[in-house]
Image (cartoon, rainbow, N blue to C red):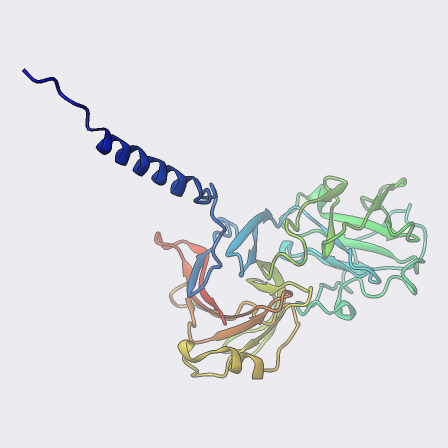
Length: 340
């Protein structure tokens, strides 16, 4: 039998081919482990859960389709963190009211006033706030004594609080407060929080809390309870009502309603930029839904379309489509929106 002679020519060809393949594949760049996120485009839909009592505040970033939730019932006063401003707000969502008294001693017993109560206007205009002007220059205080009705749902012993604002020290608000019959009040300092619209203070906790979870340039809308004046259908009688609605970020965010009977599909950037925008916090508000007293249910007017210009100069169109979840429970605003 003849011995087998190896095919050295074939082996040389196989080795050369292997080396070429190895050289080519070794030159390819490695695939990244985490690909860069794609920019979200097209029509988006969100449904929010405001909770059984609608006490949950939902903060919305439209560009990133991101939401954060906080308990909107925990805070009492909001102190402006914006440079050059010192306005304050009260928690209208708790049905709170504020009374401004005299400039006397805070360490005395106060009676519950029968009139003179105010609440913040939903537009967010500092000149229309319940507390109004409490400082002539942002450093000193006029020294008014205030009484806060924290809301009818608060325990009786914790419902009414008296407080007084002192001189601003190193940018911090100085606050004295106590129950109406306290002869010695507590003294606290409320500091400004960089990047936020307000620092939120709770009298129950005696401290600030994270009621605004995102920085002022990282959210566009907040869905929450707030107080407003409503004209009763049929009678025309105005009354104060705690509504559930959509408020704008006060930081460089604006909105406008699109002219009636404009199809949602027809709203483009050119149309949006032709509208007169408003920076009122309640430019969108609550009346995209209507309450029917006969059925006891809300209906949503999906023909009301809004455009929004965010602090980052992004433009969106938005309309509401529902206020109920699949189980028929209310407090679940659903809306669709698209970047223009």
